[in-house]
Length: 110
Image (tube, rainbow, N blue to C red; front, side, top):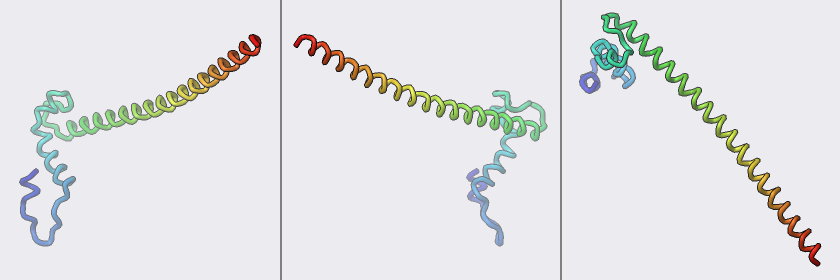
């Protein structure tokens, strides 16, 4: 990537963006990557287009799982807040009853 980034830019052309550089490197490196093959994201065949599609599909699937997990966490946070509020209300009511009971006992003694 550094070679591409540091390469001189021909006159009249814009320098490549980081995203364009990464895309170019991935096009060449994904075909040679044994890591992707070892983790099951790319077949050992020479069909790089299919391997790239598999990687993209897997990444999309992981992204969707992450989004679902984040939504579930958000719902659980809301449920937890509601439960905490109910507990606080019950605690307050219990304290009030306890206070009233003490007051009644004191009146009976007098």
